[in-house]
Length: 248
Ligand SMILES: Nc1ncnc2c1ncn2[C@@H]1O[C@H](COP(=O)(O)OP(=O)(O)OP(=O)(O)O)[C@@H](O)[C@H]1O
Ligand SMILES: [Mg+2]
Image 1 (cartoon, rainbow, N blue to C red):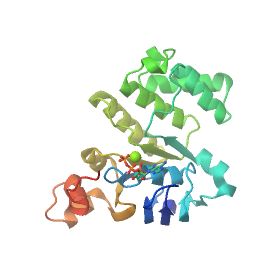
Image 2: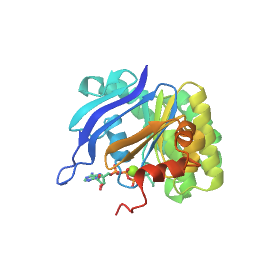
Image 3: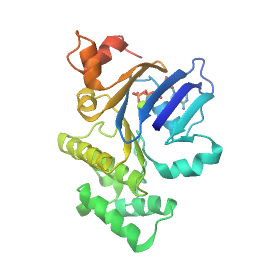
Image 4: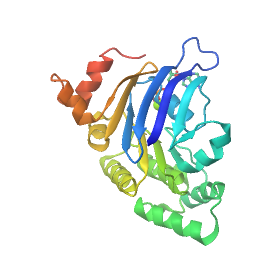
């Protein structure tokens, strides 16, 4: 059973001469922790945005938990997926509780059950003491953790996170990674992107390395390392396939 299937996906942004996605193809199984890896500009955020229905691909097929990503399934897929975007998507002038109440309402949750759920997650993510503080007064790590809570209030079966550990301290990162493992052990699929390859190696059961809008290689991190005798870790595999040239 396919968790995520992307087949021959193409995308050119309006006004761009070059396509961002050029026949991207990969599959991740249901219930896995999967990593979408690639250099800056590879097309990771674009891919995630298409998977979640935020951006439209030009051609190709995307299947999410056995549902084709198309207008008829958009509402159903919206409830399956929780998206944690690369940029913090919270209202800076509102407190965490106000933000999370707003996002919970969007999914039809309200009243005491929603407030209990919000407090449960604020405690789990170590934010209970700052529950009523405005988001702009939060540290970077606190914002990242609150951003994750906004995506899980509706118990998504597939959690998609775009660089959830970028720029956070060791303590926040360790908390976030433990949460992802726990959430996955309850049966959810996880798809995440990161430039921290040591982290991806230890977290992910499957990874896709993409570059310039195409899939370069896919597999289990340990299997990929063993398949390439010159590689000691996932970072070596990544450099083996993507080279050392800067992307800008
Ligand atoms: N809204 C947009 N309009 C035009 N071009 C875009 C847009 N969004 C992204 N691009 C271009 O598409 C390419 C891929 O961008 P994308 O953000 O998907 O890459 P990424 O792999 O997520 O990179 P990063 O690791 O830096 O987050 C880049 O060349 C970028 O400039
Ligand atoms: Mg990105």
